Structures are given as C-alpha cells and as structure tokens.
Image (cartoon, rainbow, N blue to C red; front, side):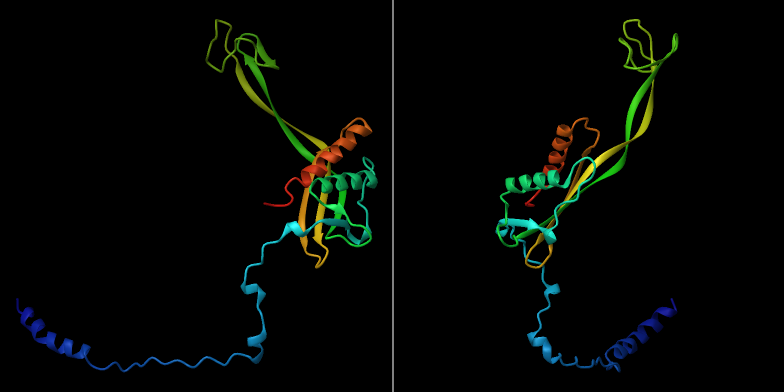
Length: 215
C-alpha cells in the first residue's frame, strides 16, 4: 500500500512532538489564612450528637405548672392521674419542692376517623343473591361441594365514621428544654359508662408511653 511507508516515515516526528516540553504549567493560589477565632471555636454541628442518657431522668413535674387539658369525656384530673401512674411504672417519680428532671405536658382531644369493613354478598345462580355468612357447602364461582350448588362472592366495602379519644404526651429536659419524648395513642370514645371511659383513657396513656425509654 502506498500510504504505509508514509505513515512509518511520520511516526518518528510524532514521537518527537510528544517528548517536547508542555507549555501549560499547573499553578494555584495559596489558601487564605484562618480567622483568629478559629483556634478557640468549637463547631458542634461537625460532630454527631451524644447519646441521651435516659437513666439520669428520675423525677418529673408539669411543664409551666399546667395540668393536662381534658374534655367532656374525661376531666383533667383523670388524665393527670393516668399520666402520673404510667410515669411511675417507668421509674419516674413526681418532684418534691422543685422542678423535676423532666417536664411533662399532656392533652386529650376527640378526633374523627374513617373505618372500612369488607363484607361479602353471595349470589346463588338458582335462588338469587344471598347476603350474610357463606352458605354451608358453598365454594367459589364455578365449583360445587356435595351437590349443594355454586355461589359467587362479591366484596362490599363499607365506610363509616367513628369518634376516637386521642391522648398526647410530651416530655422535655428540664435543664435545656429540649424534647425528650413525644407520642400519642387513641382509643374509641363510645364507652357507655364512666368506668369504661376511664379505663380507655388509662389504656391510651400507657400505649403512648409504652416505648419509653427508647432502646
């Protein structure tokens, strides 16, 4: 091929060009001096927060001296007693004469929730629709069981509204006001007697504090 000798003749020139000095020289500006206060300033955001020692919390008192707020289903005194009893089970005692290690606030309110249930409406091809429990001997569509026939199951989703009682409890560090624990729990508010409502209230408070202290 006529081009091959020409390429071989230009190869030494290309190698010589690669060995020539590079006209571009890397350079950089020096870093500016650190400010004078940098040597004595501690940047806490550059380090992870230390693990909270929940064992040092031994006592508690109401935040701002305010008792919990209640509603028509339970007065503040019932909620205060329920919170005090639940905290006692977690080793926290009411402070005597001074602010406790923890500041506690609690409130209770009524909220509405939507609930859904799924029912089944069965259809017998011989006798028409049937609503209720699955008939004895029935199977799904297209099947037979001991000659009793076949039934088609149609899911029916029913939505209804209920009223629930929501209890919220917040714990704060008394030294710096930082939040330590916050949780809420709910129970149905349709209890027929005061005893049942009080029992539901205590159950909600215990559920709200069930995860304290966090592991």
